[in-house]
Length: 206
Image (cartoon, rainbow, N blue to C red; front, top):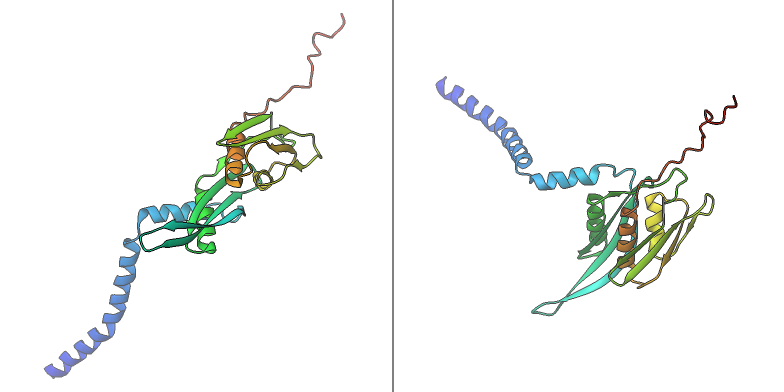
């Protein structure tokens, strides 16, 4: 009788042991996650549904190592929600997909807010220089659209600007022009609200 009860206990323990081990393993994996990775995932997931991305440029670059050249890809990506938020990322990867993914995650981390007018244009004229790139942005009347080309156009579209005039005056480097455009948009000041209503108290006739 005693041997039978011992065998039954051993069998029950053997049946319950794998479930406990898997539960412990899954619990340990959750605890072992890096908090920095959690923050990155949270940042990348916040507002991911409303954000759009555009690939500005993809280059194949080489790094000279001891055994030869190591080839990789560099991607420049712009992310925005068309409502005044815009960001840019430049990253390298072993293939095009990984480079684009890294660049989009970096762009989502460094989103910046842009101040626009109710008409969908910029409040004032802006001139900005970044290395050899120089850009000019001017407000445009309603209905004119985005009058700009090159690397500036996707930045202005994703930022939510509907009417603007843009011109690249310096280098044709796409990455530098995008950085110059973002720095110029960051310098925009809040638009001044003009009161069209005049005081009628002074115009009252006695």
